[in-house]
Image 1 (tube, chains in turn red, orange):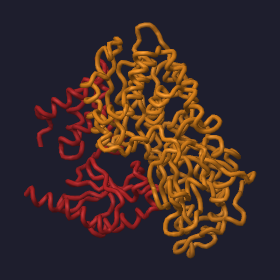
Image 2 (tube, one colour):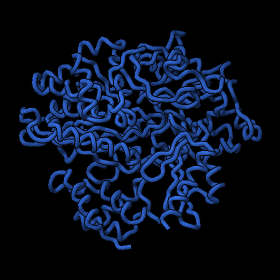
Image 3 (cartoon, one colour):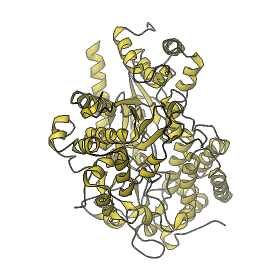
Image 4 (cartoon, one colour):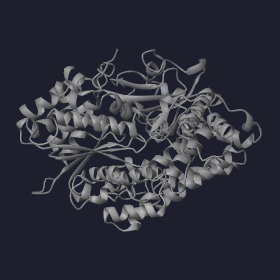
Length: 167
Length: 450
């Protein structure tokens, strides 16, 4: 894994920084960390944070303190697909506990763990703003809503097929 | 059917695109504002409309605008708060997802009125696909001359930038949002100075909620006075309510604030009644931080009057017997729901989201979660209830930002109205693990610890 943006990613980096006035490039830190996470395998190793610090001309500590504050940045490796299941009030009263238990059983992992094949990670998260479509989870950049056991089965199968197709 | 000002066109096929939005009369308010109105008259119309901030606090929007400082040579900024993170709230997402141009039009008019040449939409990081929809809409609007340089030949320049957060409830608080937009941790600032004086990059800044800014469009279209005629009292115009929990029709509804809570829950036009033929137990009417109310106090006030879906009526009785309109996140709990468990998940949420700056919130939210966990697991003592009450009181009002209050209120209200359910949990350690308290509290719904 090379910890440098390719040309396409660098273009995106420049687009992100251009949104802010000159000298305020630190404002791009959150969007740039998203870009780094997406570019470097779904998580932020220290080397990636240091690279972002150099790009934005700020101290590494300014990147670390931000990366550790926000819940969307992964500070350790994750699977190809991260199931982030909401467990807050509205999802809970709509049956999220059963869904969480079912996912654990189907994948054979506990929250915070990754399957041995490296395909799935399970994370429990707090309210994602989909309370009317509960229970739900976020996978990458999309929401999977109105979850049922059948739907969970279909989603797992769908991602397994995606991985198989790539291999 | 109630009046629809924001979602009227939400079901028009293709309304997400510029062409359809424009064909349906879109950007006519922006045209009117930029070509025919002065900055002062736009602010005046918003003031006359009585529009109150739709994010939760309900502060008059026009007044907030009038506070913005205008020092010579210093740029000003409008920031749209799209960090929607209060559990139960998903109305802004709906608006941005289906009517992105309505928000862009509202932002353009508001940016013009405030003199913001660079306007930012701070959207919660998880709404990644919504951010893409907004960026596409901005691109279309720019291509068609509604954003960019010298808009409509007025000499006004404006660009809107979408900025994704990265998962932090606290960034919905306006000064934390500004910190986050500056690329820092979302630690709220001590006020004063208020953002209107020193906000983003220490420049004068106004932060408004998505729905508030979208509402500027109908206000300019119809005039502030006409807008103010809709609704009742100081609850003018329409409000988006995101309804969820144990109801037949969860979703986002636009109401004109004259409808009763009972009609909202039971009519087919809105929530369609409680799901699975169950009974209504309780409701959190304005997002998870506002006080939970048992069914009897929800449908009628303590004085026995009908309760309505508006700012004044929902807060009738204060925190003793009322609640708040808040963000419009309307969470319904049916007879099978356990108040202790529900309160526990909310306490866990606030502990997770506390930024850690102020000790009462950082420590208190953790304590509340642990004690609730203990009671929920059948290991609680009666004295734990008083301890919980004591902790929440010591958090409330003792923190830099309102997250402390937001964490304290749900716990306080749960104990206030459902103390007997907490006691039952503690006194029936084994039974409480397999069954729930149900609707027993109706006999004596109000308990205020001394």
